[in-house]
Image 1 (cartoon, rainbow, N blue to C red):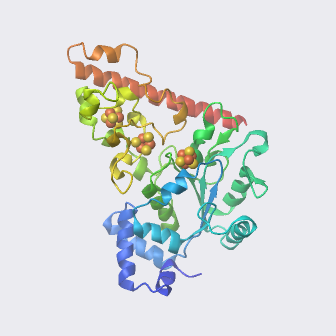
Image 2 (tube, rainbow, N blue to C red; image 1 turned 180 degrees about the horizontal axis):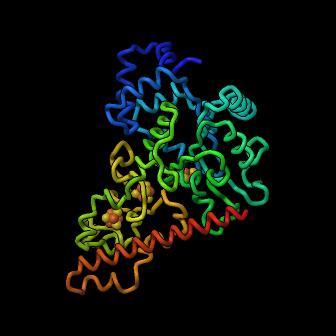
Image 3 (tube, rainbow, N blue to C red; image 1 turned 120 degrees about the vertical axis):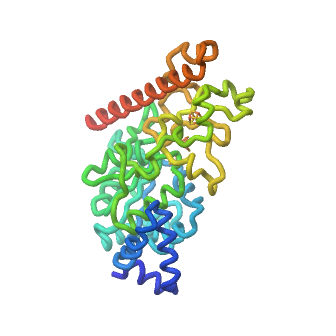
Length: 358
Ligand code: SF4
Ligand code: SF4
Ligand code: F3S
């Protein structure tokens, strides 16, 4: 089988352009400059890995996000060179023709393709709530995962069940990791996830043929290693105890911290505050909207959206009156954040137990 490098040469790429591409790619993958040699060696020695992208209970917002990537090298590499071979939304083919193509890839590239899963998988009533070409999502996922090199769950739906999993979860929706048990599932949560995080993670697996370092929820640490709060430009106001109390008060106009308006940034791990959306233009908090915690499990059920949940009653009210108000506010919010985190862990553990019992 031809290597990625050989395929690129056949398409008219010069050695010089290839080396340039590898250098840009190394940076895009979040690797040190000294790793360029490793990326070059991987592309010179490994064949291209096809990508099969399945969609189950989703809104296709994650696919939409992918098409908004502002990294032309990576997007071109993924679509033209690594090749997303099967994608229900972006694929020109449909119906029988598309399914046959998927079966062919699964057979020809057994053990060598990357499986991407967007959307949650319904488990109630035999999984009848989502079927593709006569097979339930559970069957489709199990079949495709069996010979996949790696499984990447995209979006909070694909990773943790997402919106369909929200109480009362009528379809018994779960993330891919609850079905695929015999190999690691990389989770790329977010509703939707950032396009650069999707492309970089797929490229990491497809080009280097190895998994990125993951956190305890299976998320790549390079992108989910810090909270939104850690890198938030409003953080100095949080430290000073300066909070917007309503959407149009003086604090909101001054760009103060949005914690009291329901910001979940302190307990949300994602890269929005650093990479930002729409080609690095902005992210929710910069656009005056609190972080909703969209990359965390059960975020739809984690308390009222626009209220600072889990802050002990009275503490926030007291902060303005007491001496050392900012210190008290910081303490209260830290307690609030810790409680939110504890609540999330408890819910995740409960959800895990329920899924195990099914
Ligand atoms: Fe849509 Fe969000 Fe689910 Fe992605 S994670 S499919 S954007 S609801
Ligand atoms: Fe930023 Fe939200 Fe943290 Fe305030 S609570 S500093 S708005 S992340
Ligand atoms: Fe989601 Fe919060 Fe980023 S809501 S898009 S993780 S700022």
